[in-house]
Length: 489
Ligand code: ADP
Image 1: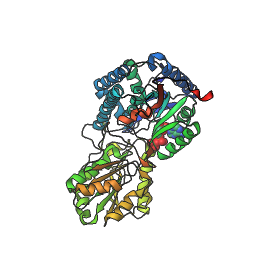
Image 2: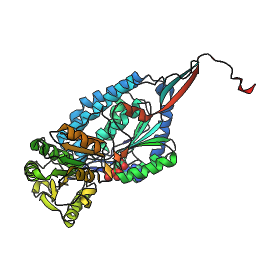
Image 3: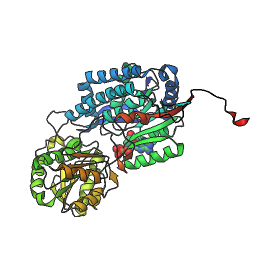
Image 4: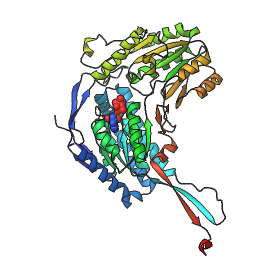
């Protein structure tokens, strides 16, 4: 198998760092090998990026021409949708239909930021003096470090590349070590779309080596990160020392609330999708469910019944719901959380183990798991498991419910299932979460800001304003009727 090249400062070349592999989590066969970026590669990419974003040909390129590159990239992604989705499934084991959804979302993210950059401009603040006009403009920041995790690569890569380029910056993307393939594909696509050389580099490799060197580089002026809370905190420290901004999209332990008046069928379908799609490997997974005691048994029966019907299997097959987890080590971590939950007094209602199917033994599969009988204080209810594990807790009254739902270091998302929209609004208002879904779950819109409260993050991605997170504001003062300032006379 030929080793893949990486993309450094506009050149395809072998990485000069350690060998890394992409393996298909469905049976752990080798999909690709490549050498990760070395520290010299980081240096070369950053220098090239710094030269590239300062070039007048990019700095002065009118926004509609920057947009044209993004539109072209989105068209190329649409044209290659099937091929990219297949590669995404091979790279991280995401079921085929979900992988296709991610690819389409990457294309629409590129289109959205193309449109936003065409229409967004500066401001004319109200005049405070008849002889003075002020103009507020937005300029690029410079070299952006974009660091992404392995769970939804193409979508999270594009969520950073598109606004950063639309705003006139250069980007260096460091994908997760386990899943380098989509980032490299995106580099190819942007090259074909006519992005000038040096504005995008892709540096696969270990976070603690390549990612660390990248974010510490003095010419890197912003960190846009999606990943675990501990890593995010480390990066925030580095950013604080450098006095640069960060955008951090971090972990979650999102509560979902099923009120007594909920449409139980709707709620059971939503809760099932909210936790078990992507095998629970999603920061927004609805992994803690609070159910009104009056309807607890009826709801659990429906939820269990639906979950039992989920098809576990090779994610390349169209009808499969539950594919493998990313790696054997991650499956072990999920299993350890289930064991811990049992030690903490939890009872397994469903799953809790590796599937028995002989056809699945080579892959990192884990059965969808439902655990009851824990209090919200248990570690399995407080820590992010990042797997197909749902904890379910009954509640008796709403004030206790809100307190318990908010009793978490995280605040990424929440779900509410009820027929009463007035109660839903009140609850949504009281929940400490960056996104609240009412009678739906895990749906997104690129035009709606996304991000976390508390330890789930800083800043927002998506939405009109997110372009400005990749820009810095400059104020101009213009004298309309210039007069000498006679202060020194
Ligand atoms: P996950 O648990 O989802 O893998 P991580 O936070 O470990 O979350 O990883 C998310 C991304 O951050 C990956 O690309 C990883 O390589 C990178 N990363 C991890 N540690 C560091 C670090 N110390 N500095 C920079 N990037 C890092």
